[in-house]
Amino acid sequence: MTDIKTFFKKWGEGIQKITPLQQSKINLFGNVLVVIGVLIGLYATFTSKTWWLFTVLCGSLMLTSIGLLANYQKYVVLKRIEMQTEVQEVNTMEAKNEER
Image (cartoon, rainbow, N blue to C red):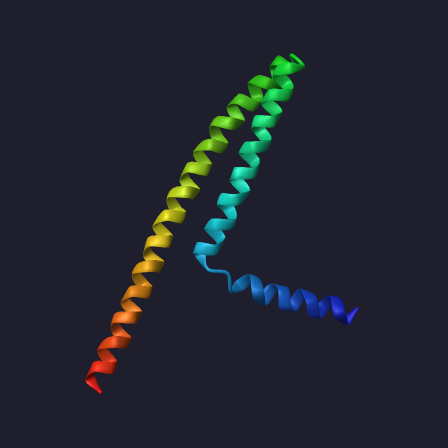
């Protein structure tokens, strides 16, 4: 029982250390999987002529695609911010080394 408590304690600590960029990347991957699933569902419902479900999945595809686009834009912005932060840190370290 203590192993389970230890596991969840360490898992919780690890989850808290995830950066926004990592969260965005995970969300982006998840959205891609959902879009693939919806597309497979659209094909299956089209071939089986289940039109009411096909219509629902078309609406779902639109909403999921918009979510995918939003997450992609968020990922790109966070990636740029991280790159700028890294460049800024390198420049700061170089400036400190030049002072010495």
